[in-house]
Length: 368
Image (cartoon, rainbow, N blue to C red; front, side, top):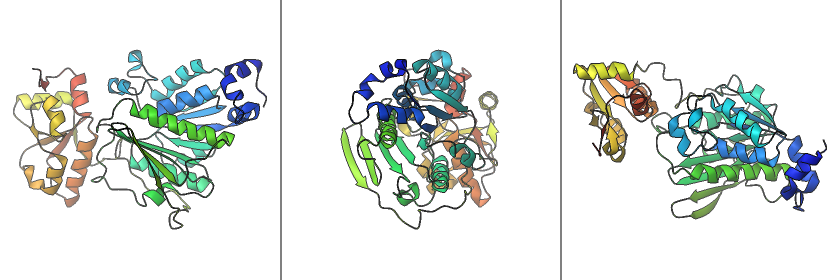
């Protein structure tokens, strides 16, 4: 698969690198990479891999662009709000590099489609933000023997490594078992400095390029941890554990950040607003107090920890609605509380505070 004259011009700065050259650039053109998630991490990964000339790039994401995404997902713009992330990403990336072929998987990654999807790619890049997707990605990569480029972000801290590369450690060597919902209550609503996904995503793209071209040393068996607030960089060793190095079939992974809370009753913002006007519901906001103080609806603030330690803080005998930023943490809390068979009076505000504001319902802020 030779490069055209136009491609040689485009990739000149790669080609004049003796470590890459024409051979390395042709390897990039022949490669197929799947990016799971077109959000904070996925956007910079996709942009840099597209610019680098990866021949085929798969984009797996079922979500839609929200205004709150634009602070960090800079592939998208204001006019894209409400549209499919995977479809819009492919359209914009095609304009960045017309020599790349894009395959859009506008679906949720599940244990029913992961193996079929992954088998068509050489490398899998994880741009997700939740444990179920990470464990599913890891296990599918192990079964198919695909390298798994991992990235994670939290507030000011980012992590990146490569799993399952040339018999290196796997994700389960780092975290053997998937945490339950009470241990992983945050997905997109914990907050993150906007530039951090760009930093970590660029590192992930770098690992992909290194693996394909054979340049440098792949970040396998080492976890790079970056503190963007203090600009600290630490490199920790990860040892391969034979107990977690082999997976024969996919399991059940659940979904903490999308669907999967089938037993949780939901209430829409408009329905809740009407009930609040008629004094028919008690609203409890479970976000951190610092965020609650910035903006909230008429409600009582209780922390997640205090509720889990003392469920009796939530009264019985009346309808209680739990509220968080996007409706995911509150669903997880309700599911956890209902495991004992109690607290059947709990409802979740569908879409959280963000959905409430989209409906232009009243907000109390520190500026009011």
